[in-house]
Image (cartoon, rainbow, N blue to C red):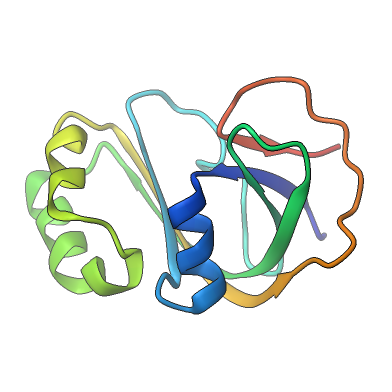
Length: 131
């Protein structure tokens, strides 16, 4: 079953997705929150820039890999194997040393909107599973 999601991203991250420089959206959290175990292959993710009102694009989820309380060796493997696709700077990893959950969302079929859909979104969470 197709599930729709709304991902809030900073401007640079959104542009990297549209340009193809970023092909994996990674979510690294201490708490077990969306999108962990809530997004799957074929799902649709709307892209909204933080602080902006309009949805600017979307992508389909190709596949997802989850890590529940990853070991240091698993985090090191993610860095080694997916650094280019995640398209994050080296300082990114310093802020993620004490994480408990990782969602690696492989991006497919990116589309930038000319006329954005209207979706009601009133909270400030970085990822929302839409009804």
